[in-house]
Length: 334
Ligand SMILES: Nc1nc2c(ncn2[C@@H]2O[C@H](COP(=O)(O)OP(=O)(O)OP(=O)(O)O)[C@@H](O)[C@H]2O)c(=O)[nH]1
Ligand SMILES: [Mg+2]
Image (cartoon, rainbow, N blue to C red; front, side, top):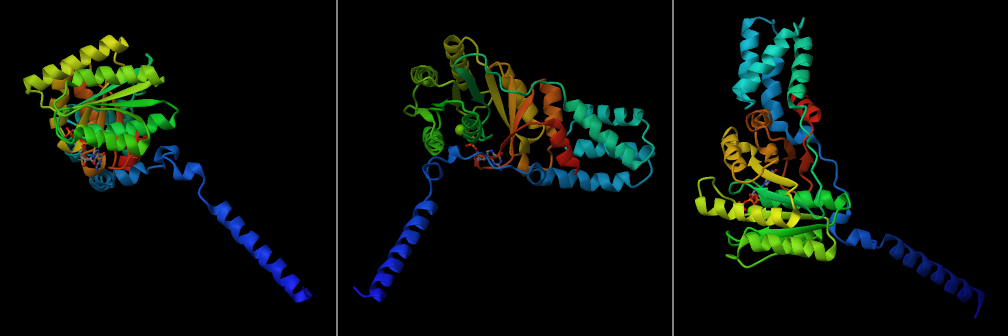
């Protein structure tokens, strides 16, 4: 072999090694190609998700705070809060408190309004309770409020916090409901317990608990059929699911009522009806991205005395956020 041939072979070998190196370095790792749930949830901008409510509220407020703090100002401030679905009682209380603080100008009034809104939402413990193992999260609410989607989002959060989750599809009433939850379970890579449409929901709840104990999962989330509070059969069926889960777990740590924020004050009526049948101790307020009336959080909490634990701000699996009063109010008044 002459020198040129030797150099040719060396160059070709080096090139081959470089190409192979690039291939192996750039090839996605197992983590990249595996479950979506292995990736941390991306940060969601609360301000942009609440843009409808923010535009409605801030638009009216900026005009107001630019003018004199006379009687008309206080009346209009109250009307603005009521228009944002804050609720008449809560709106009046907030305005009275701001007024009592005797702000000297619009800027001081704005600061005081912000603080009063945050104070009005502060107090309740909003963390998920986890006292049993497995710990149960039962999800209830009227049709189409976002129960199943919120369960997927919750599972996603819990999984990211190193919990091992089982999803139980106890909505055996609506055709397609079981497959909808199964699809989410597959995407997230969490354990799933299903049934045939028409099966007894309480037995699904029981099997989900059994499965969790068998595999050492620490959280069981149970989906239920959407129901109106005046549907007697479905309400009795829900009471049975509650009894079975209470028997199996001792206590249901979290009974989450899912309320669609776009239904505004109607959500309060729904909430009150469910509280009578299941030991509801938390609210997930969904579709906050689709309403200009985000103030409904304040009214719902005031009327039901049940804390809003999470808000839904979109349709993807990362669009569920713990409800944090200060961040929420700042996003609305931004
Ligand atoms: N924009 C938006 N859409 C949402 C949110 N949460 C749920 N949805 C949508 O609302 C629709 C109904 O959601 P589901 O989760 O199926 O509601 P459900 O309460 O389980 O409905 P049923 O099982 O029929 O009672 C779906 O199209 C969801 O993508 C949210 O926070 N924002
Ligand atoms: Mg559902």
